[in-house]
Image (tube, rainbow, N blue to C red; front, side, top):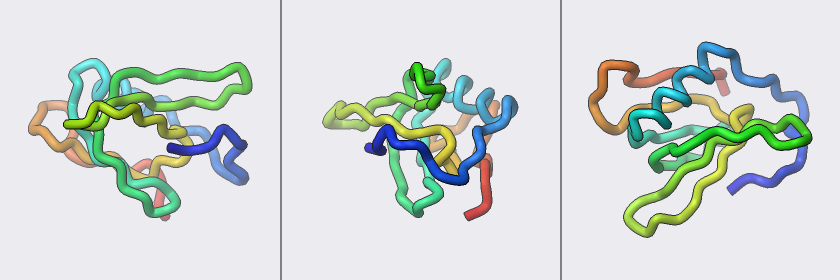
Length: 96
């Protein structure tokens, strides 16, 4: 889980990239996320949230232990769908 401190030098994701996160949430597509720091997270996204300080988060659940996952969207390097779907396979947000 990431801290709530500002991500220095990181740009917000684009509207197109945000759409892929919303699709993953809507259809409960399990995903693997690689962060800009090289961390890999595997979970099912549930929602996005913007805090008062204008930081956007992707929220989800890890299985099978059902632990909460919270990822800053500006820290995402790529997402990969872990279940076949008609919307996306892999999307690169930023090059590391």
